[in-house]
Amino acid sequence: MSAFRCDLHIHSCLSPCAEEEMTPGNIAGVAKLNGLTIAALTDHNTCGNCNSFFAACETYGVVPVAGMELTTSEDVHLLCLFRTLSDATAFSLAVDDKRIKIKNKPEIFGRQLLIDLDDEPCGEEAFLLINATTLSLEEAARLCGEYRGIAIPAHIDRESNGMLSTLGGLPEQPDFPTVEVHQPGSIADLEREHPVLRRKRTIVSSDAHRLWEIAEPGFPLNLLCAVEASNQEVRDALIDYLSGQRHGEVI
Image 1 (cartoon, rainbow, N blue to C red):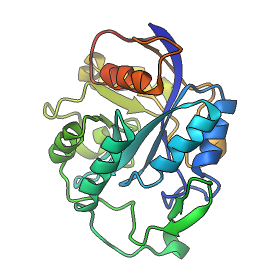
Image 2: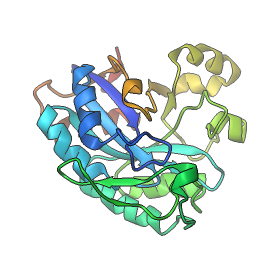
Image 3: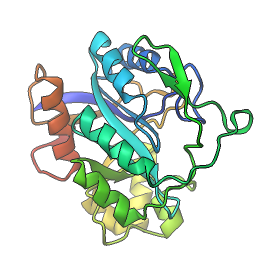
Image 4: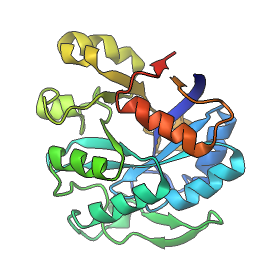
């Protein structure tokens, strides 16, 4: 078992609400400077910049995780993380069919920049990414699982798009073994109000939309793999842990 420092919720400039300096290369570089060993790219309703993110993380020596912050039909945000880039890419294509295609208005919502392997803009997503998909909470969790991913209710301590504020609590089904908060100080109060959370694993992520928001020094996790393990072995250990397997524990 080895210790890792993680930030599992970061947006690139493909998310219209993120700043344009949030390129995959800049994110990977700041993650390295901040001492992170694992970083996940989780844009709204797409994995379109994950390929470039993987290339950038290889340069900087950070373990990359491909992910997405999916908006369900109930307007709940789910953090979806995957074992491999190919799993995430296939999931992204499946989600694309469930998006409600509304033309983006960059002057209102912001640009949605696709970034190439040289960390340069190579196009823009034409349709708005931050609106809800047609996938229900249960459908989204099931679809994520079909692509070997783990779905995590995002920032449950927030009013906007948090599961607790939107639904009034955590549903019995689907069963989410892990939840995410933005502020670690909120955990105790949430557990008192929602005792079911005491049976869940909790991670803390930055939900960074600006480079200075990327977590420093990250959320600590012990994972059942060696420090020198391959990136794939680390990702597998991470997803196993987030899925509720008992071989890892928060430091």
